[in-house]
Image 1: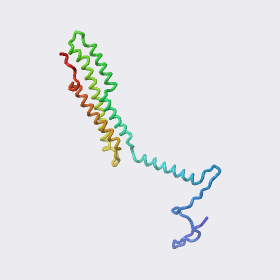
Image 2: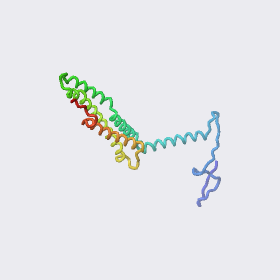
Image 3: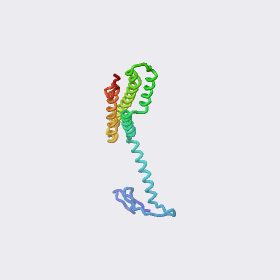
Length: 192
């Protein structure tokens, strides 16, 4: 082992000593298990690097998972508003049953059509409108979220695309629901 002495002028005298900043050659030695000292150093360095990556990830803040989920929910709600959902189908069937029970057989054909089919059609349109409005609201919230989030952290492009798709489906679904409810689209046939 070398020693190092420094005189008052700052010049090194004696045997050379290695500082932390100088590179040191690593000699591999293999023990009975087959592992090397260099392998142990590498594993330690990898563990420390993994800890640094984890610390950086937690310091960066939210990852956008919630925004992505909101965008997908918006698109799904918009699709349900267009295709009809289980709740709308059950509500329409219930209205059909109520119309059949409340309408007397002696009622006019126009009244029977309105009570049995018209109310069910409007109930189906109402539920489609509820799903469309929910899709529209969720999509707009997802698109507006970055304005209230961490500055300088952009929203992922796929989140924007899916959220815009949900908003578009919501607008189309809401328009169709209003047209169905007001009988402007596929209104009841006249009984005359």
